[in-house]
Amino acid sequence: MKSIIRNLAPKFIVVLLPLALLLFFSLVSIVQIFELTVLSLNVVPSFLSHSFSEYLINYSGGFVRRGLLGEVLSFIGEGFIIPTFNSFLFILFITSLSFLIYLARLVTTSYFVPAIAILMPAGLVSISIFHKDYTIFARKEMLFYCFTIYCAAQSVKIYRSRQKHNNDDHLLNAKINVLIGQIFVFSFLAMLVHEGFAFFTAPTLFILLSFNTLTRNQKYRLAVLGAYLTLIFLMSVILFLNHGTSDIASNIIASLPENVRTYHEAIDSLGLSAGQAVAQVLVVEHVGLYNDFLIAFSQALPIIGISLLLFSFLCRRFSRHGRSSIDPITLGVVVFLFGVLTTGSSFFVMGDWGRLVVSIAINSLLLILVFSDVYIHDFNRTCVFHKIRNVEITKIRFISEASLVDKKITFLVVLGLFWMGLVFRMANCCRYPYHIKMHGIHNYLEAVKDLILFYRLF
Image (tube, rainbow, N blue to C red; front, top):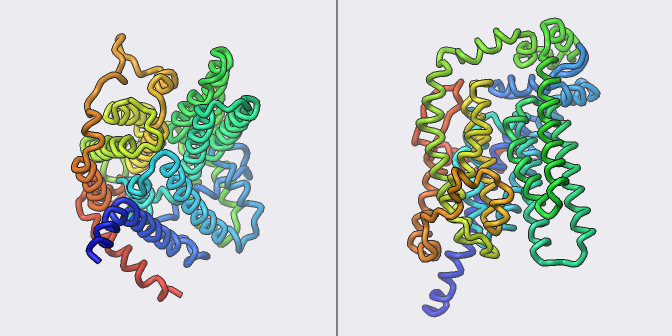
């Protein structure tokens, strides 16, 4: 009996425990979103009224930014708009969660990695648990994140096929062309859905385009990247010129069915002039942009940054093929700074550090997963910012190979990541509390209670 227990113990710790944690936190998050959407199929919670009203923006008053999804919804019957909205949110969350777990399993060998990937601060589980703080699951950018996770997984699969040196180059190039086409078409439509796509997701997709065109000649590669930047720029200009007017906002509200006409918070913002929009950002209720800035850059982002560095270590530790020789800390720092520099500018446009933090967390997480199993020369060719003043950043070493295989260090990293994911509660800038709190575990306990009593909901 003792020998059986001794033989099963390593398998339990390495396989069964992380798998159980992955399934458990997945179910907890799914139940939370299920309660908010499917169980209340004909109701929009009060804290989602602004998010829902953004989906109602359409072209009934003329071409205007953010109107594509609303135009699609306008063809749905009056009694089906809210149920369609709730069903879409639930399916979108399930799909995003599944894609992220699949991507983590593609790259790494341990179930600890996907379990932590979904549990990261400002990650998918946090979005579901702290749904009143993070209404991201009901925002349009959730659709962007879902597509980006899909593209990241496809990029890993294509790179892996390329490394196998298959002779069927025609098929591989066809797959790359399909993915490039998907990114261009989706980006065009996404900009019509929400112009914030240029900040939330476009930079990450640009990196993935650069990564997938490594095997092409330099002219083709530059043409693809230049065309993508041009597309995003031109769409941004067009949408800026069609910012909206008060007349367009009034026409949109008038075109809505009676049962959803009261949801017009986001529609009203179309009627604001550029000066009024800036003033609204500079003073977010009574908190103010300066206070938000301090919270984001002195509290939230340091926590996210530390989590990403530890996660990068874990990805390299459990890398499926062990191709990468990039130091995990260096990779984490480069990817995190890229996210801050590209997405951070949206903070001064929107003044919402909740969306800023989630965008940086998710996009950085995806790039770490992709590049943790990539040869260093391919990473250098993909990311032109790997060199500063002739110093190769990717050659800087913080973690030794011996530390990567040290079980004690790995245990501490896993423990630290689970602790950070469960404890830190980062509230939205427009909701109380305004600062980072360390009582997130209470929300998780409530979610576990909901999971245990889930059957009573029926």
